[in-house]
Length: 279
Ligand code: NAD
Image (cartoon, rainbow, N blue to C red; front, side, top):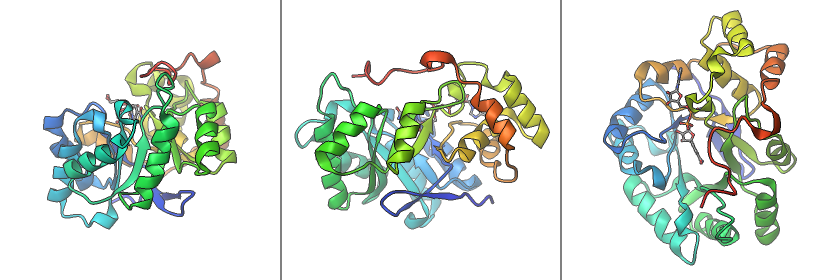
């Protein structure tokens, strides 16, 4: 079974750099899919309250028999629960569905600036961490102005920012801010959610062929070599295995540079929603 490297967070905890994300995994299929992911060697699961499948993740964790301290579980606070004590209730519900007493990482899912309450939500996550309900805290889909505001208000720097990131959309202002402020980047949609022909692009095909790997594996390797944390999604066992089989090769500097150059201009490579528009 592959040994998955870990990345050290700014609070001293370690996170497996590769995990399994369960966005759009149907609730009825989640226990099976997560169970298979655990069987083939994944130990880091990324879910969210809004995915509606935390109970399936919890059932798979319980059935696996894997000691809790060998697993890394992330879930997220949904957008309509930023206010008042809603974050306290939300994490209690998530923990109940997951069947665990503490998550490893809890994230503010989107800043939803239209509601302008993400600073309060972040301050509540600091409290939840201090209460031991989550070991680490972070954010998702936060742009640089959002990040600067939550840090200025609380003095607490998120451990991670989970953002859409793949070769066509590299979010350089955010990754540069994160590097300067000791925040790890988690790439969501690391394979571009299958919405454009990433796997047919020349630099990806060339890198894959040079190493006897698939285009998906070459793209995942690009993320890993940039230091990003990834959790590609699939419900097919052979793809779960393929996406984990990325630790026996490295891209050369020129292969990484060629994939870097695939970024589309002016943010046009984005495949999902813009954080300022999600509410
Ligand atoms: P992804 O880039 O991982 O793409 C998933 C799709 O790629 C799958 O549906 C599958 O069709 C295809 N795929 C997977 N492995 C493949 C392979 N080896 N070969 C060919 N095709 C393959 O997109 P995603 O699921 O959106 O992102 C991964 C995870 O990121 C999610 O499951 C979720 O945990 C997280 N996420 C977070 C947010 C957020 O707002 N924080 C948003 C979206 C996703």
